[in-house]
Amino acid sequence: MNPVGPRLGVLASRVRVEEKAIMAALDRRGVAFEHLDPRTLSVTGGAAWAGPEFVVNREVGHYRALYAASALEAAGATVLNSAAATHVSGDKWHTSAALLAAGLPTPATTLALTSEAALKALEEIGYPAVIKPLVGSWGRLVTKVADRDSAAAVLEHVEALPSPQSHVVYLQELVGRADRDIRVIVVGGEVVGATHRRGDEWRTNVARGAASEPCPLTDEITDLAVRAAAAVGADIAGVDLIEAEEGRLTVLEVNDRVEFKGFQSAHPGLDVADRIVDLLLSRAAA
Image 1 (cartoon, rainbow, N blue to C red):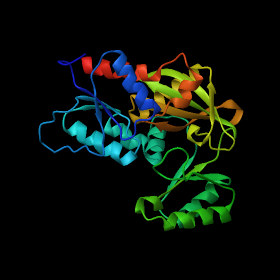
Image 2: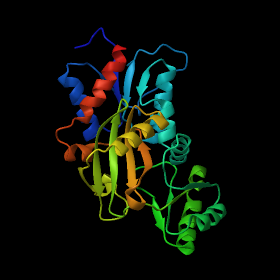
Image 3: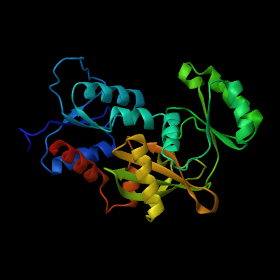
Image 4: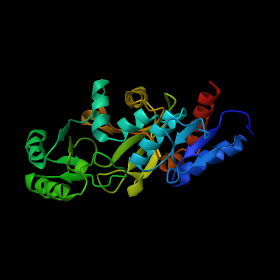
């Protein structure tokens, strides 16, 4: 065990398959760690922090993940991923802006602050197009709109949402193959592997029933994934790529608290949790 070494932690309110795998990887190495539940976590500014010094952030809720990481960093802990990375990658607009600033190919994207502005922007983007919430995962509330009438109906529902942030509209052109995308796992600036995700509908999230299959790595896939993770500042990332015209790849999203159950089923010979623990221990030993 490591009673005199750096104190390690796993931040998660829900211990799912991925969190269990990370904890098991720590156990296999005889490394002591603390499970931090953000629902019971409190950090006092300026006070001494007696908790873990190095923490893997696996909290499923974006805002809890963001503020927990920020509080832990303020207390002197190192968090993977950092609060800054979670801030960028947890918000689709911030992610798009970071990808563009890094010169990476990404679908044409527009941010509209009102429904009226969104409808006008959609005329320029062209139909079909996609309306997405700024924050969210698993394809929830992501809607494909075929024409102005369907867009107006969706935006009417958006206006009725209680949160003011929900009224900010993220619009994106619809590109790529209808049947699959590519998920690439990046840890510590290196690609672990990639999968094709195939679904019965245009959204290819594993949480929505999409199947994962091994995807051969190419220089292009590796380069785009590593650069995309770096663009948002993520040490651990799931980078989603889509195939546009003539097989050209474009970066769709970067997930900072990536789920890898589907990836692991497609790649039983690769151990994502072990790679995450390798990174955590290397940072703790630095």
